[in-house]
Length: 328
Picture 1 (tube, helix red, strand yellow):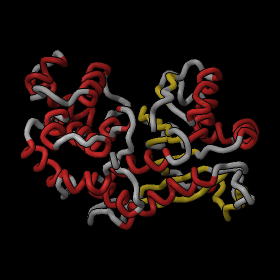
Picture 2 (cartoon, one colour; picture 1 turned 135 degrees about the vertical axis):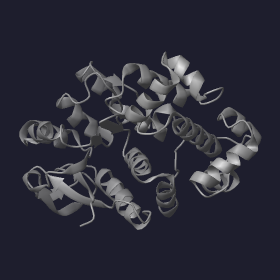
Picture 3 (spheres, rainbow, N blue to C red; picture 1 turned 90 degrees about the vertical axis):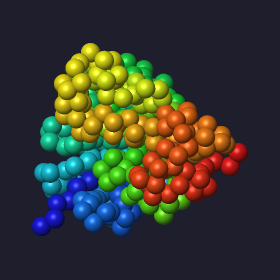
Picture 4 (cartoon, helix red, strand yellow; picture 1 turned 180 degrees about the vertical axis):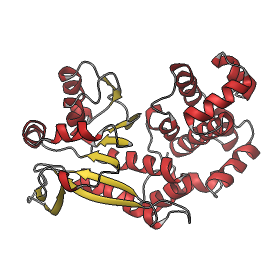
């Protein structure tokens, strides 16, 4: 039997409806655009006790039969916690057993994520302590007040702090899930999903949303993690193997071996992805000439930028801008 990635979206009475529907649609749409060797998603809606879930939406929109936590498969790949009303959050945090269940799953689940105020569930369980995180802009101050151990980033669309991921208000959960699909299935699948759903591949925002950040592994050493972040923040200049090895304080051979083990890719592939992400963001949010974008993203020349887009996305930079750029 072909393997699948089991994804559970967790709701509860008082949940924000779009926090459930948005992520589920992204993963469902990804299944239609997977490459031939891609691993499909099996997405289920769950709740602490199972059964119907009454959302906070006007008119009392009710979701049908959700799977109970105890009936979810043991090999979950991703758990997504939806946000909701203050009353709904209080009830699910303090009276549902959800936190105990999450603690029982954290060691065997590849990643946990929250949408909007779902971050308060992760915070209540201590999963965000010592990590960067975000939530709805109107709740960031409260999150920091309740849990000072969290490094709250109020201007981020989403924050990747593997194995935990958090997103800002409501539709930002769609941005996060699109980035998760890109990390799992590659940029071509994510681009196809974004086009189908009429979304930005990368909505205008800060560095936290760059999908390259999803490549940072939870077990990476501080030295290489710091170097990876520096590459993401500034992918320009000389980033060849010898230069990066020197910055990491390693021999070239040791550096190449360590980087591949901890990042799951080669240094040069990581650098190219960082540059591609920067170029995509600039194409989406600026009206700069393509030659300037090539320079500011580290590709150096328009020809190199063009080849990278055709190689990874099978579209030209001009086409990408026309499809996903902001009207300025």
